[in-house]
Length: 494
Image 1 (cartoon, one colour):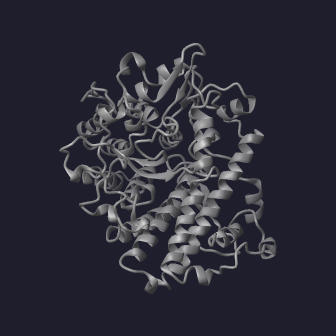
Image 2 (tube, rainbow, N blue to C red):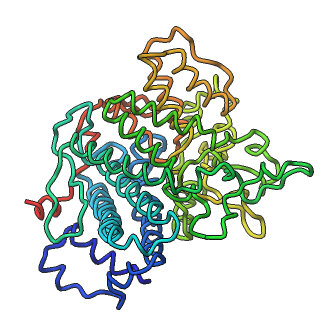
Image 3 (tube, one colour):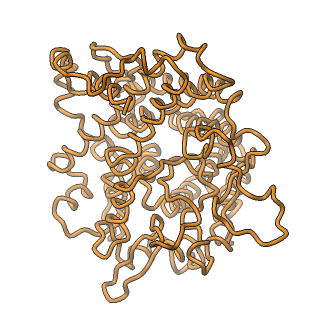
């Protein structure tokens, strides 16, 4: 591929000395100047970053169905190494190796983003229409998304220590090591990148068009259904402009800003960005008829219309997800008792997630997650099987948390809305105190993000204890919330 040279450039920021970098020979005859001489070259480079982010090294594996998911305490393991991971034993070789792998590959992806951003302003004249703004906005959002996840893994939270040494915020392709920023400095850089991206995407993203309809690509609509109800996500004549929810779009940028501002405890700006996504009404709630359709080809397993942004899964990643969750000998399998406790089966037995996401093996007393299963050929899937990056429900959770102090009734209404669209009709008390409200919010988020590696971040941001279904409590502290920095990285930058 033409973009292979970008991965070489990125290596200079990860475990590689200047001398070692100069010894590496390019894998392609295509130079940086050639690749970035045309609009198609920029598109290919950006598509390459998305492809890389969707591999097993990042969101097609490690950052969706690996250590972050293990420490969510949702599963039962017999393997000793995995038990050590679940117990936050960060000196375990499996932890050390995986933490270094995530760090290395995230910075490779960031390096590829930087190669695009360093070239794009000088080549503005090669772009047609609004593609300059679109590509730059997407790339800035990708760079911020990656940095924010690194911050949430490898540094103390803002709540615990806003001036703690955090991570390098890398914005240039250089043989010089980028110094570490502290937590607040990283958050400020994230906000700057995302706000710049938001301005660029506001004028260029097709998803903002009134006739851009989010929905299922293969849904069979009854006769007489208005044409306007059908998805238009694959209708653009340009493949690059189709399926905006499989990329970082304008609403992804708003959603990531809502996350970052909340992490920084800026409730006003967090609420504003979350509400922008909610009030756009671009992402319809999944309907019961689709979630429970008896026809497997017409059943929604992921609440697909609600996904704001996602990672497209290739063959290797898809098989990896199946190995983790749905195969006969899947790695991440909860007991039926665990599942019943997490989903409060006595009270929440009508929860769509509880009823549709799991397939019980009563004899083995275990259950398999069905969220990422594919239909076997010749059957089709109603929607692409993707790894969610940002969900509509998360925007409601963020809006709820950000508005509780100023408007508790509205805050409970946000949570009730998610619960209602998951089949739960019991509403939260309008006199609920904040501590109880946060507990209810986190409980529902744990159900929503099962198998998506998001709930750990929530516990860390709120400085909440992590507990498993056997009653074991891991007290909130940097001991469990801060991943080990790769030793090679520390030595290189020192």
